[in-house]
Image (cartoon, rainbow, N blue to C red; front, side, top):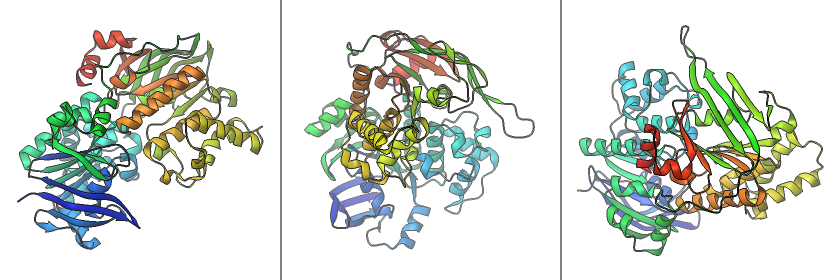
Length: 514
């Protein structure tokens, strides 16, 4: 008997059927993956049978011999507590902000009636998912962890009670290529050792060939192709599957030869060091960034590449004036930028944050979100002037003006990312700091965002510091790359040179895993 089985399952919300006639089967120890673009129905298919969406399901969903369709919320809560683990797509919103890592893990380990784990056991849980210095991480809150560290914490929580089935919705989208492979290998080992089945939702198509047994490709709420993972990855048959695979960034693709020539230096960073206070009475400060030097020229895109928790975002925030600087200097056209910057200085460099939906106020309309920087940076503008700049920003990111009245909840992932970019552009900056601008997006939408950034680079002359863990992505539109490891630059150079002749161990790992 199968561990988990869907037979002609559908999901309906209101009068709309968003998922139709999906059938799949997962044996103990097997991994079945759902692939497809945003809005194709992957998350609804994976979460609805367990009562974690607003949808009503039709057809059949059997888990370990128990029919889930028709169960009330109390019964579904017991199924989730005892039998299933969940890894959600956005860890910052899924984790409780006032609980430490230790409290999250303790709660998860005990949810199915297990004993209270001791501190050493909790540290082992974090170490098992690749978190460095796990004892120190136990006392940190979600906002004190990097995006990748939060994702690893969520995975540790999901498997803490040894579930029979793991529902993993984009479990490694926030992680660097090397760590993605490690985490997927960890899940593969766990499912084979414990018999845990895995239903994996993923747009990391390259990893499915190696870590999934079977793949179902979804489009518009239906399955358009299904089969063995290796067969679909190497020779997809459906046109939509072929489009997905073709849009996935790869180091095998030729490097662009149409990048604009860089101009004069804009930003120069010398000896940047960032330290954070340690926890506890006698704890030593933690050095997140250690003596970093970098520069960005007019019209140039420079990639800052490294593993999760290597200090990439900390550097980006320091350059944008949003984070602390313990030592060193940030110069703009040769003149120092102070930590407390003037209004005109704040306009020069604008950030685009890692998680677009988390960075957009859920209560505000899109037009208000985009206009917000103008209230602080351009207070001289009239309401007509602000409306004109908002309209221009929407046009720059190729968004329909009709979206201006929507709330973030009514946006797709790609639309939310475009709104975040429009908000950064509305004050007419000369440089963007892009923190993992496509990590949460499927290949098709990610390719659209990359095309948008290349157009802004070419037509607007905007310089960019591109913070990413994806070397193949950076190669599509960046002139140079700096590789970061444990807060230090370990290698830098032109993209072609780094890819062809990586010298540092971290660079070699990223190239090998891409």
